[in-house]
Image (cartoon, rainbow, N blue to C red; front, side):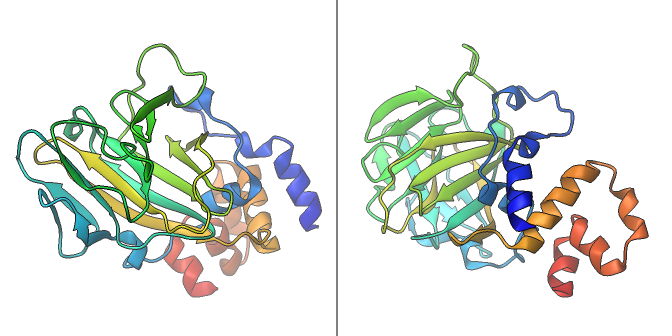
Amino acid sequence: MGLTLCCWLRDGHLKKHQRSTSAFCPLSVTPPIRLAVLLDTPPVAPGNPRSQWSPTHLSPNLQVCPSGGRVRRGRVEQSSDAVRGAVGAVTGLHIWEVLWEEQQRGSHALLGVSTHKCPLQVSGYTALIGGTSCSWGWELSTNQLWHDGKRKRRYPRGGATDVLSVPDRILVVLDADAGTLGYVVDNCYLGVAFQDLPKGAELFPAVSCVWGGAEICIRYLCGTTRDAPALQALSRLSVRRALGSDRSRTLALPPALQRLLLDTAEEVQQDL
């Protein structure tokens, strides 16, 4: 049964999206099965340690709120400032949600991952995350990828000549086992942005910015090991894909199955 579901999902059924006018949807790629299951998994409960910015590993021009989930940049000039997550990942597949209003980005707004060696503040305006060999970043204002101080290709692949406007909500997808980093925008997986990330090193979600007053929120959604997805998760994904947006048909099912199929994270966790 599990093998049948894997084949069914692999053969193109993962790429079904609700009708959308997003410019990113035509550029989306089919996510691997592990990622597809993870993207369909209810998020972990708020308060997870990975849902916090580090209160110590950040630029002096940044301040983390008491809950740890939001960081704010002071109104200073001629400075590029970065912060990394409080907890990173050495193994496994992980997804973080980052909320960063487009109006609060300006130039040199980068989102990605870094090791603990990445510098967190430099004078002037520059691509700080991606500015050294210890970090990898996507510049949201230009769609350019940065690593080792060098501008790489534009992301996602196949994009138009014009810069695409990246919405406020972005998902960071880190596969520490495979050594890859990608992003999800408008519910569209845009493929691998970086590969050959160092295996065995702890990698942290990270941002760098130059916009005075910018506020950036982070939340850890979910993660999984390199093991194959559980049959229950594959079954949930296949049923939800078949139902599409019409989830009202689940009302004829027992309450436990309804909670499993609907987007109610807290109820699913309580039931399990």
